[in-house]
Image (cartoon, rainbow, N blue to C red):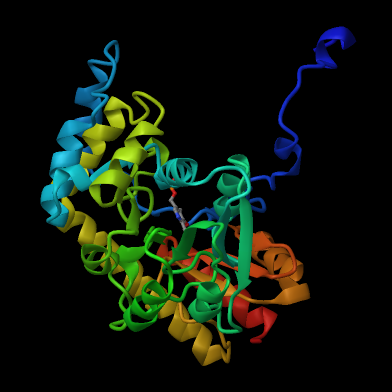
Length: 364
Ligand SMILES: *Cc1c(COP(=O)(O)O)cnc(C)c1O
């Protein structure tokens, strides 16, 4: 825009916008000449959409002149059936990030507090501050796990929401059932406890919590799930919550009308219909994860236990050097300042290259 009078607008915007941390999307893949690049920076599924899902999307595209079903009825029913919960307990949104924002918006007035671990999912401080609420962060343990007892101690009478990320993005460990039960018992039952299970399909730790089982017995628990990771639909933006009816209704009230578009609704239903094929793909990703983890252990690395589709390298000030080494090998990874580097499990060739880079870098 050339006209200064226009570009230097004097409209009043909320101060909080200038204070929000930016959500940093994973960078696109870029490779040195002659080398295939791999994007391992956004925890995406390396597999493209299933043919049956593409077909459902193509069919849905024929009615793009119409608004989507605002109630998302068919998908909600299908999810309720798949999860064995009442349909009134399912609320969808444009990705689970949006659903999370709706929960915070529904629960928090300005000055209320939202407790979560740090580091954790970078959307947490953003959705919290956006509604004028106060983030209260509790540092992770050295092994990348939530310190749930410390989080319970951080709850005050201003706390409206607690966010529990299991497995934790970006560090990888899953919260255990006994820990979460003890935590819920210690927190007042008018505080919403969100169990963010974006990666639950990749969890193999037998002690790991299954959010739905906990949800059934606690009226303040909300389970957050997504089609973006294991289901491979990150580009379509659809996620959902399982919540008790008043909370589910509040999530619907705070939704953007017609947000979940018709292609996303169709693709999500087709994905639930193709659960066997998708489960096979998840198994392959888990097998690749295990291969990478074993390779790293053999090299002498000591890393947090990952239950997700990524590995966390807590490299401190060496993070930049490691992520540059990855980049030089055609691997785009996600660096978190001087905390560490998160590397998504991708195509087998990409994963093998991760192991080569890690070996050359030297175990820590
Ligand atoms: C990726 C991710 C999500 C899912 O985001 P969508 O908006 O559903 O794509 C939610 N929570 C965590 C912790 C994640 O890593």
